[in-house]
Length: 324
Ligand code: ASP
Ligand code: CP
Image 1 (cartoon, rainbow, N blue to C red):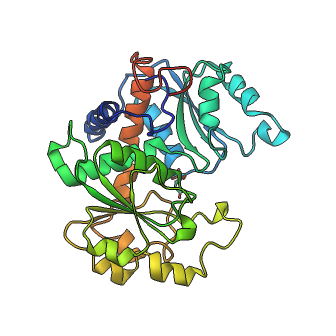
Image 2 (cartoon, rainbow, N blue to C red):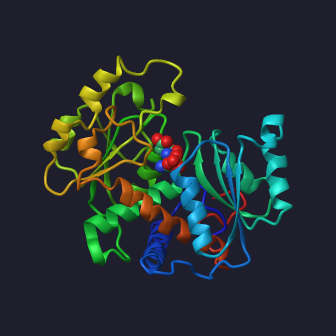
């Protein structure tokens, strides 16, 4: 793998390969000594232009557990505030011999630009770009679903026939986009549930069903419900009447959560707005995979860095220089 920029162009085989390598990595994480020598001598740069807790820290943990050296760069407090461009920033880091660059950026397409511009030769991993994609989040979500639903028999499996409802602020969510593409590739049936104002206008190319009624969708039976954060920082207008009204119609409140059927799992990428899109009753329940998702994120990111840096580069998804 040369870069990991999106899930839209990831094939079923490539996705399952990453998930299976992540299973191997997870096995090593239950040992007392979690560190592997695999990426000794490699340097991973975490280049974060937007805030992050989980993604930044788990990429750091993943790189360190593979014995890579890690350089953490946050735009805040850097020369970006003096007007330094993405190109100059990236080339400065490349001059310090980065082998992989993990980038989060507010502009959709920034990781793609970095991967295809010729500015740097390092492998690029998208850690979330604007409202576009967040591929490692979708991979860790798929990994979590696969484990919860298939248990010990997860390896090699896809998510054929698994029903997933993605609820809430789809419009601003790169997590939703990456999940929609990956889940479709893995054979899952996705229903988006949101007020019309929080859905993209044209969904004709998306492999999903759309519902405006959360209770109906839940009553139909879902294997997983993925609650999205209301991204107030990306909203410059009012997208719903009030937080109370949003919570009543679209939130996974205590009562709605209590009506969930069978073994439905409750997912959220974090950070959560407790009391708005999700209630503590749902977030802290046995059905919730919120913290499992974080734990699994380390294994999935170890797999991504391993496949990028261990000599398998140039063999699949993102081989061509157009950034595919
Ligand atoms: N943390 C995820 C992201 O950065 C989801 C969110 O912020 O709502 O896309
Ligand atoms: N889920 C996720 O990407 O979280 P952070 O924004 O904290 O990295």
